[in-house]
Image (cartoon, rainbow over all chains, first blue to last red; front, side):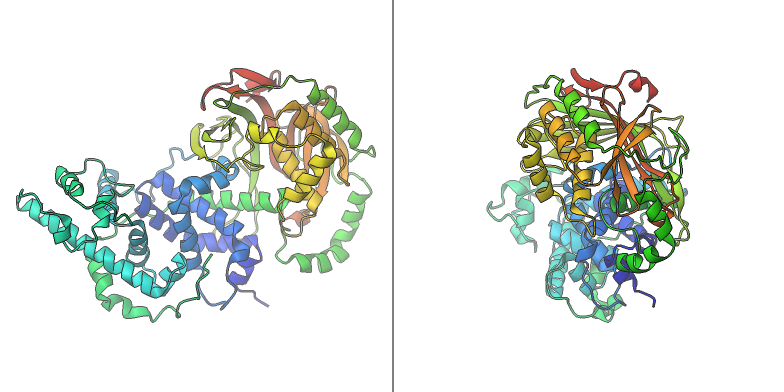
Amino acid sequence: MELSLRTRVRAGDPDAFVLLFDGQAGVIHRYALRMTGDPATAEDVVSLTFLEAWRLRARLRSGDDEEPLRPWLFGIATNVLRNTARSARRHRAALGRLPPRGDIPDFADEVVDRVVLTEQLAAARAALARLRRSEREVLALVVWSDLAYAEAAEALGVRVGTVKSRLSRARTRLRALAEEELRQIRGNREPEPGAGQLDVDRAAAVRPPPEAPRGTSPRTRSRTTIETPGMAP
Amino acid sequence: MNREPRPAASGRDEGRATDPVRAELAALAPGVSVPGLPDGRHLLLKEHMMAEIRRDTAGAPQPVRRDPRRWKRIAVPLAAAAVATAIAAGVAVVDDGAGKPGVAAEDSRAADGLLIQAAASAETRRPAAPRDDQFTYVETFGRSTGLRYAVGGAQPEPDPQPAGKVEVWLPVGGTGPTLTRYQYDPSHSGGGIPPGADLPSEMRVGDAGFGNPSYRFLQTLPTDPDVLLALLRKEAPKNGENPRDQQVFTMIGDLLRTSVAPPALTAALYRAAAKLPGVIVVPGVADILGRTGTAVTMKEVQQTRTEWIFDPVTAEFLGERTVVLDDAAGMPKGTVMFDSAVLRRGIADRPGEPPVTVVAARPGAASGA
């Protein structure tokens, strides 16, 4: 009898992990690269995700054998991304046996212009930095990694409704950001009366997100100062 | 991981293409078109994962076979029975001599004599007396052997990784920065992997423990071998079908290899190991640096064994290796899956800096790395 991949993963069959890796390492890597912007970190996240998957295999929900394992892996990757240092500590010995990245090219496609890519990644991260982490996660899962709402909900361990409301908030914030950029382009230097006028969740501006881009514009900073504190996420 | 009730089946989820929120977000925050993982890196990361799984299933945890129960019911009664009997009787399966892959013959001697001698040797050391703001330092030289899988997963073959030097700094007090530094010997290196990489991390309150053995944590452990053994048996992680004492043996081995411990605790670890049933002696085992010693080992249910190699004269710990006893382990018999020698242990003032106090060093070993 042919056992399903899900059953084999749960049972700790190494061959099943080979199949899992071959099938999913690529999408996990893209997810990690977009979230971190750093190729080396993204690779560590891939390794950590699969080491965690191995460690947590027994906790994989049994169930419909036809269900894809992708949401489960994305959930693990999300946890690794939330606290990479902690995961790295847990697997310190294993990471120690990971051959260092050397002169192996970062990327498969040699046509890729690294400078352009680096700039694009930085720009994407600047936009992401305006979002709460929970919103960044749904954006990266649903929009960039093309997970269905239900899959993203499974990955994050939340309800589908929560995924939708987080996406909706992300949209609102990103719209406000786009408008702000437009005004800057038009040379409107008039100080903003406050972010409250924008249709934006003000908490975002009160506390600069952890990955706030360097070189934050004076405009952003001044807006931060006139925000009402105490609305941190 | 996902404790909430599972949401409705995916697939017919909000017709992705026509979902306005999704579409607008894609326009507002277009995903950068990131390049994929190159094939070489994909393979390398996969091989690393497989090596770790193999290590995990051998050094500590679960049986390698797809279905452990099936393995026991069918495989043992049939083909492996003769080999298993041979091992149990202490007959050499393969003996390629010291320093080469192979399964050396066991000695009929009990292992406790050697371990008691090792304990006595450890006790002659002066305690390091480090300060909380200092760092323990351990330098090892080793290699692990992974399995090479073709994409798609055909028959695996052993795939020795480059041998390399690993240095680890851990905060004495149990909190603060840690550093792991790798240097791969270019002469051993295959695949154009250059030596040198740092992996910094951070230990926070509560992190110290058997997995992150800070000096202060090790000082809290009992040095009475019986009390220590009882504690180790209690703390040993449950792992698949591994016998508890196999887990304890692995745990002690990890501490011997990776920590700077108070001499009294090192001695107690040896004495505790001597009390484990099934611990045996294997003479004439060479470590990765080619130094021949006498090993103490215990057969693991995965058809492997991890050998702690001691200097035959001083009974000092030289290193450790894990050897495959039987093809049934998933790798060819005699494969050395993991091979590591301790070069230096000491106390450093800062992570990344050489030790200011060396508590143990192997003469002539450092240059060999």
